[in-house]
Image (tube, rainbow, N blue to C red; front, side):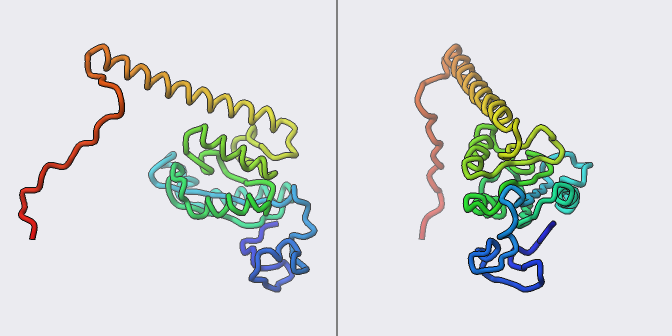
Length: 211
């Protein structure tokens, strides 16, 4: 069951206070929905990344529609759909941060995405850190196209998935460290490494007379 406006109840009446979704003021439409069945949907599109021939990377509706079908098939109830247009490497995405804020308030138990890179294209250690923080609030990530990715509490393989992702993040950090050390070693070998942080280039003095 999908409700695209979390301020509107299923019986047609409206509430401006989102807390009433959970019956705080009485009658909220999610108050009788088990926490494990409350979910949100997140979609993100960007013309600068992904398969340029795959319209799912260009139009959010092409991600949202199959995710809504998943909701219906699983018997979930959607708290809200969040949609961003922009790079997944940007941590300041408006809808992304609003979603994380709502997750910290335990508004839903799962974030449904078409693919993990729609959630984030940040480095793996950052992505894992976000997933672990969500997990501590009882919220998991469920990917439609990556059937292995389900970190929700009702998945018995959750701990294994998190362990593998944590290992992958550690490997990423190790490889970055190795590349950095290798670069320093090469510069030392040819006498270009002076240690410390590289000095910032200063702008040349202005030749225009200030008035």
